[in-house]
Image (cartoon, rainbow, N blue to C red):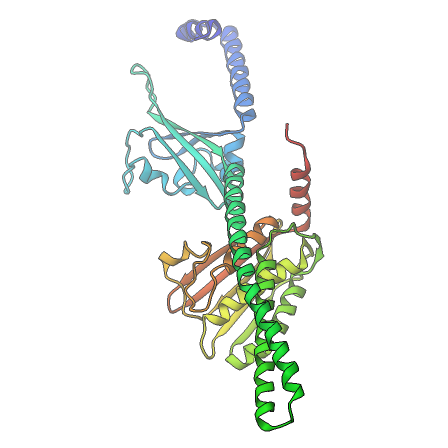
Length: 397
């Protein structure tokens, strides 16, 4: 303990002997001490909270207010469980209330309000001295690990995509060579058939050669599109309207939707602002999500598309009445080559996730077997995206 602290303790020990003047001086000194401590704690970037053994928040610094969305009037009136519901279980608090001496806890926490964040939580008991009439409480220290977590995920995803692309490029090369050879031989066959006298047999053979040539061109197109979709490329950011892109995708699938008897309802509650995005990449996102919804339904069904926004983000939500996804499969959706479809390649959702991440957005999926699936796409508004790009352009210190 510092000399100043010891001196203050000696004065507090004789507080009953102080006259009104010295008592006033002491109160002023205590107020200054408190203000100094408040200033120091509010400078700290980690969230710091003091919580009593009933879970009531007794103190929260500025960082804690920001990280958990704690209002000023919550301090002293609201329990910590409202902001971190699982904390009571981690600290072995009784479900029906009551006091328990908290233990030391250290773990990773994921919260969604007021923003989606990853936090490292450290809880440590604060035991009052035996001669004090204060109840035991505990301190919570919260460190924001969101940026580190996202950087790690992006690096892993980038390495994963590089591996997939190299593998796909190798396979495409091995497939492309025999396809080219087959196409050359088909051209030679067609040239020889043209030299023969016209007959029904020759015509049938020529039709078969044309069909084979057409299928080879189709396979070559599939390979080229597949590689183009996998090849990582930076987004070409321009002002775009999400609804315009969505309309293009719906128009492209219009006939197929009609053939399947699928009804599409678009609900737009407000005019959406423009965003900074790559038109073609966002089109790829909508294409993959809509295609998944279509394939989740047999004949008939309904897809409801709704769009709305808040001060920071724009949300596009697609809800279908398809077969749904089992809960244990939801976590595997973004794994490469994982698919529940017989003819799927298992890369669609991985591509969607990568594109959204490069645009500063994210995707949420909620599904129930037999009920359908709801996919929510989140895009940052233009002013927020500009800040993200400016932050990325700043040199590291």
